Amino acid sequence: MGIKFYKSQEFPLEMHKVRTIQKLNLLPIDERLKAIKKAGNNTFLLESNEVFLDMLTDSGVNAMSDKQVAAMMMADDSYAGSESYKRLESKVKEFFHMDYFLPAHQGRACEHILSKVFIKPGNIVINNYHFTTAKAHMEINGGQVLELFNKDAVEPKSENPFKGDLDLDKLQAVIKSEKSNIAFVRMELGTNLIGGQPVSLKNLQEVAKICRKNNLLVVFDASLLTDNLYFIKEREKEFQHLSIKEINKLVFACADIVYCSFRKLSSARGGGIVTRNKDLYIKLRELIPLYEGFLTYGGMSVREIEAITVGLDEALDYEMINQGPQFIAEMCRMFQENNVPVITPPGGLGCHLDARAFLSHLKPEEYQAGALCSAIYLASGIRGMERGTISESRKEDGSETFANIELVRLALPRRVFTLSQIRYAVDRISWLYDNRHLIGGLKFSEEPKVLRFFLGKLEENQLWQEKLVNKFKVDFGDSL
Image (cartoon, rainbow, N blue to C red; front, top):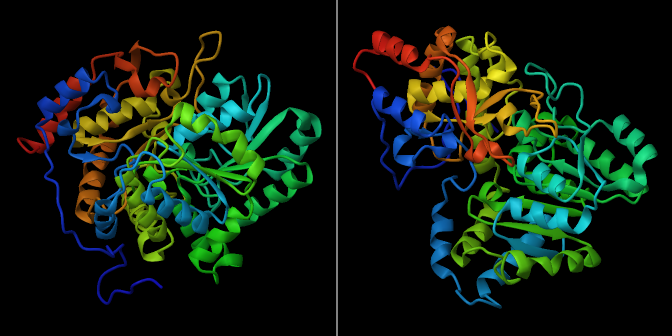
């Protein structure tokens, strides 16, 4: 039940108090200009002491609870047979309602192992929408990623509350023509690259029904699960009477294998694969010691293992998991008040700017989302993440793969930012929108072949950054 206000309009209220703080640093704009140029206009390559509000990701940077921090002091450092692992294993079985667990150091390690075991050259992997690292692992192992997203998925403005749903008619058509060639069906809860958009429980149940009828594996990426649980509870009328715990159980009844990054799901650093099928578990198990670590730590710190165990309990606490989506929705509302184009309806993980609409004067090959990320840092010291064409990879002939949707993600890690910091972000980016004609495009100066958005460097394709800095000084004077 939401909190009502007497004289104020409704706004998200923190259901926690701050007990430990970390000082922030906002560089003057001339120093921000030097920093972004040195980083090759890639926000991943900025140093943390050059960043004011770090909205790059929620991965491994959600605030831990007091109970998680306390649990870390109980860690058993044994290489094998750790008591810490036994506690995690028990909690994982309870949370996912599956009997077999394999630990890994983070989500992409799980993607690597699943791809190695289940994908053969020429196989198809069906997705509701791809994720960068998942797609890279699938393709390196010879697979082809086939996205069967619904018609609203890549529409920036929509009323569809579940833009992450998989198109069931397309699924049945592909099964009819390619059944023997399908490695598995992967559902991402929710869909990161199209704005953290959730998947309905009804859609998950229908996908599971179709796949089980055709003996196809259903694999869930549950990294963003908590936001998806919240949206099912709030938006799917059929299940609103259920508790988060009850919804969670119904979700995992639809999967054969689940993997996740605990860096997102449980606010601590790790990952894992879970299944109810012993034969699948045995197939996957031998690769854990080879690539990750022994079966009772999987490349994770035992201190993080203890924090994950507590975090999984907190992931079913409605008053904890509602914080992210509510603050994201409020940030989107404030942007809309200032006519700044954002993805609607608001999703999970962060507020997503529609870079294609924001910088409509730029061509797709000028990397609109990358240019906007660079400009946001200049205007505010905020580090966002490009989630557009730079996050794709080139085709075999060297031509560009243009993203279906061109986004800048402003992640809101749970329990990290205050409403005043969000208002600052909205204010600076609204100024930037009013001065968007000053923003030019980018071109690659260093371009890795794989996952180029992590390490690639870009430069201005015209001298626009100094002009933007000069306009900032005119409007804000000596203000940071």
